[in-house]
Length: 295
Image 1 (tube, one colour):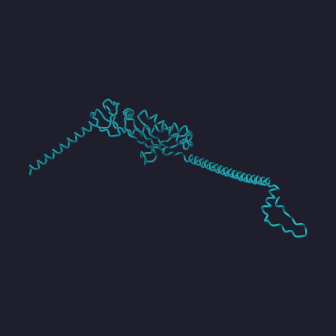
Image 2 (cartoon, helix red, strand yellow):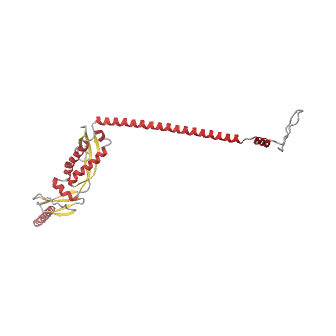
Image 3 (cartoon, one colour):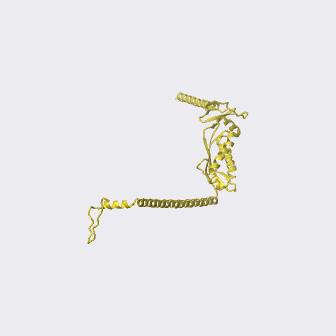
């Protein structure tokens, strides 16, 4: 009985030793090898001197020296940064962009920025900020968006920003963001103003102005419609008058031709044409009336 317990104890210790050695090997391998996933690139960092390799690491396994080297992984696929007041979108914190119009009116904007990273510039990006992409986008990129919008909207009247100039401002902001972020390897795909919030008094005034403009346009359209209908009636009246005149002229011409065609000979011929061959009956003692058929 004692020997069996002793044997079991030795076997148990052996299994524990194997597990510990395996774990040590795995830990050592993880410190020696870094896997770069698809859609990412790696940045090789020299911990001892703080240097960064200028060439990014591609997809696959890469060896590194424990303690002396580290590999930071960055995504290069398209990402979308959402900065909004709504805690259900993007960050749970309020990350709306606040700017002022040329009149000094406060405006709050919910925006989104879709971008990719140029793989060859990722080492420069890390060397500039020394942190992960999440921290960079919610820090430096967010601030760059605010500055770009402030410079553009700060020259624009609030009524125009909320109205006819909004699309132009968005396009201009996207160009400005590409110029500022492109230095660090950002490729701006799309910049969007999802929602704009202005003081209620400004919004009410703009809505009243738009209502008046719509009413004026409706009145103008109604006036143009009535003018068109009046013109149509004039045209129809003129057409009808011309038609009556044409019929009168045709009738007059017909009467003229008919009058010109009536001659004494034609009258006599019509009389003969209608004669039934009977001599006229004349009562009395006067001489009889004769018709000379030969003539």
